Image: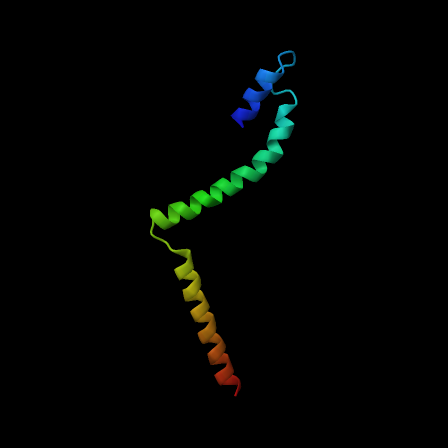
Length: 76
């Protein structure tokens, strides 16, 4: 975000800064901020809390498999 503002300061000395640039920054930041936030959450959960999402997914898949087996046994 700041690099965009610095670029506009260097290359456009006659117009005030942040006049139209904010309209360019908002959509860009709407994409970048969630991506960075989700990466941060994954890293924070894995290395700080020790939560491994793949193990949790594997455990949930095992529960779903057992539930299907029980339903098949009850139907026959």
